[in-house]
Length: 66
Image (cartoon, rainbow, N blue to C red):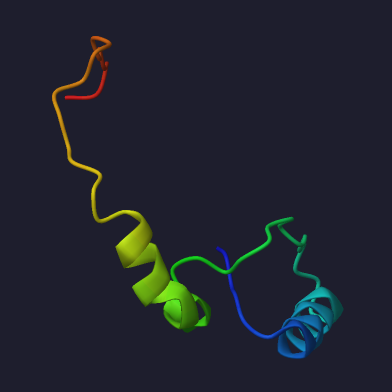
């Protein structure tokens, strides 16, 4: 499971989980993707990626998953 949030709230949550015997570790990332914390840059990202278009892959993809 991954949780994300403000640093102080995360510190409290991790301490509480560790106190309950839950093994935890902090994930070293610079941003909390998939949370409300990226809403502030949503418009800028939309503009930055506006000209990117999808295309057929250039490298064949093989999977063992059906």
